[in-house]
Each structure stands twice: as structure tokens, then as C-alpha cells.
Length: 124
Image (tube, rainbow, N blue to C red; front, side, top):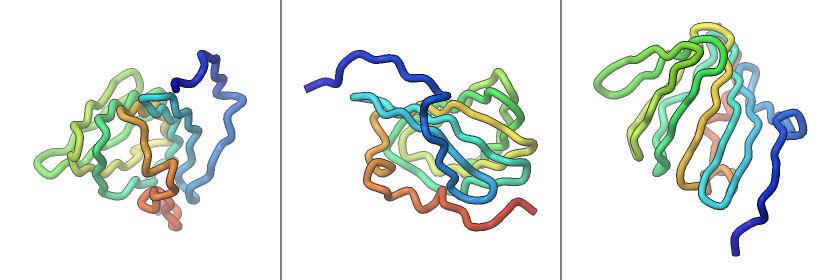
């Protein structure tokens, strides 16, 4: 059974600190996950991959995306599209906020299997 139609407000969603350089706010719908990801300058989302297709829309700052065969920098107003199962790593070139959109739902996050994001080190 599908969930009911509702309005979500970022201001009402709990901020989850994942480490000294990374935090997030998350909304899960029936078929998608949306997350506001906050990364301080020098913060790194370690290399990982997932079944979900991802679009990362940079709202503030600049992020460098590392892929097996290339590096790309996305600045505020730009979006990075990431294929399902494509290994990637992300580094914040300045304090940044991104809206990450995943399809299907990030079941691994719901199960608490997101240890790669829970980085205990601060940016250098």
C-alpha cells in the first residue's frame, strides 16, 4: 500500500550528524530517497557504490566526484548523474550542500547499512 500524499519541510526534518564533516536530512517516499547532504570543505564521502541511480544537485559550494575513469567538479546549480553500481567518491572543495535523489529507495540507509558515510575523521 502506498503512503499518503504529504508535504515535507526541510526545516522539520531532523539533521543527522554522520561525522565531523558530513551531515544529512533524509526523506524516503515509496520509490525514491531524497537527502540534503552537508559536507564541510575537505570532507570526503569515501568510495562506494549502490544499486540506486543517483542525481546529485549541488545547491551550495563545489564538489569533486571521483570515478574509476575520471574526475568531475560540480558547482552550485549543476547536477551530477551517477549510474547504478558506478563506484564513486566525493570531496568538498568548499563548504557544500547537495540534494541527492536516489531511485529506488535507499534500503541500505533504512537498514542502517551506511557505515561508509559515518566518517570519524575531520577534514584536514
